[in-house]
View 1 (cartoon, one colour):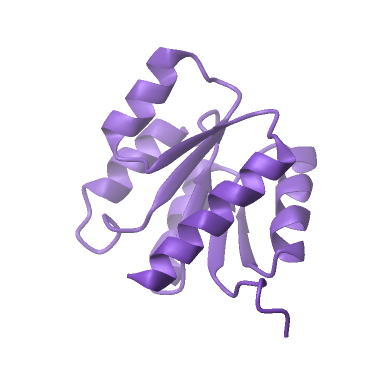
View 2: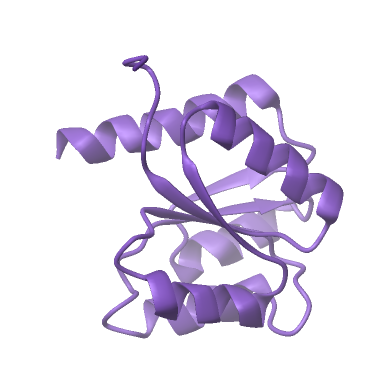
Length: 133
């Protein structure tokens, strides 16, 4: 097995099928296990069901059913999910949006359209540091 490949599990909450496929393909190529959710409600259900298996959540802000800010708020207010790291991945990248997401408890903010190299570096770096702890 390639030592640069990872085995972490990432939940991707993204409602745009093209974005979901792109992010999923990139991360699977990097060796990550992927769980998909296509709206905020599905994301919360998957997190409740698989919380012990999820190492990182990639969360869009503009999700149907329950938006990303509300998902963050619900996760961070729950003792069983509050420590799951969240990276927001969003086209809504005004400074106020980024501050709001970080203040809500997300760990990082990745803007869309994603820069492939930077995106992969951020995800791999997160897992590298998580393994070293």
